[in-house]
Length: 152
Length: 152
DNA sequence: TTAATATCCGACTGCATTAGTCTTGCTTCC
DNA sequence: GGAAGCAAGACTAATGCAGTCGGATATTAA
Ligand code: SF4
Ligand code: SF4
Image (cartoon, rainbow over all chains, first blue to last red; front, side, top):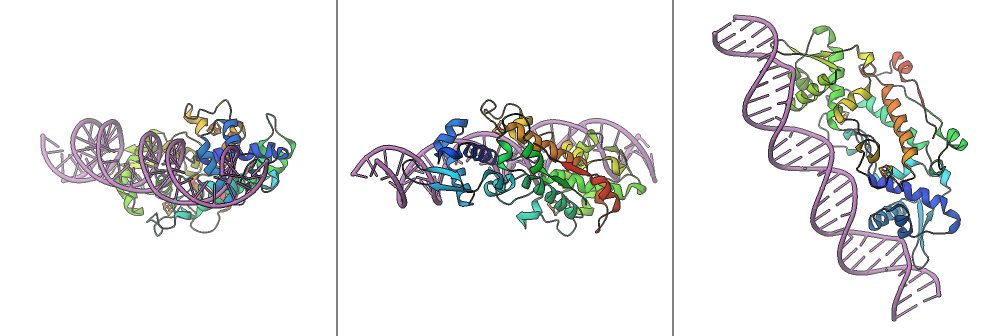
């Protein structure tokens, strides 16, 4: 349940890597793939998607590659996931639109939308800068996390 | 991304229905299925699963059916989802165990586990009793929801 | 006792999504 | 011009989900 796709997973890893290597200029897709042992061609497409979504800037040619389009603390995990996996959410009805034929009878739809929003907010409160701390909690993360309240 | 399975969806609807009809005694799987236009045989299996998980009590025979094993406010959405969809979570590594071959190199695993826990807590704060209010937020729900803080 | 009602259980199929690959073309720098 | 790199789309294999089918067992009412 609620499984994140591996692509989004890879995307987050790549973004983290790019955030760490921000000083060293652009990094090629191959570099990132080798650093984490991710299938290179797959990661390439993920990075392309991320670039198209405006989260990365790309530069073709020799010594080209990808770099963050914004500072790491301005890119939320929610944006990344949405860019890669698309805008689909926990219930089939919210975004798939016509998939569920129970729109009339379903009485649980509204509450679930609230849950959906809560998760969305939770993910929006996480930034790639929060991922780079190696082991112990960074003081920034505690601040950035914030609080998510849920009231149905 | 993060899509809830329809089975879990149906399960929540059924539980809500059973909570509402708690006074009328046991309800058969067919009754619930007809009330919401859910494929009867599919719902039957979901209810069986729920019963096996201890969330429902079942009674075979004429005038038999299912009823809540506990009061509605003691059954969390998390339990329901877990019972139906199994214990899998947002990343492939957390519960699938051997699926991801990046355990060594992956540096993003720990932060994601925290996110995972936050979502789990969020879902644990929602009970089926919070779903029965038709339109406006129930006062109980605001209390029951609580706060979920996330700190990486 | 019999028949109707209902849960229980496992196997099965069709479909959608996901993970990953291949191929081809375009851009930039040297 | 050629190497390094991005861009883009088609393609395949595998997985998981939604839903179905068939039959077995338990309970109750007549
Ligand atoms: S059953 Fe209700 S909540 Fe679930 S997908 Fe259909 S309309 Fe949405
Ligand atoms: S890439 Fe990392 S976080 Fe994702 S499944 Fe593999 S080990 Fe877990």
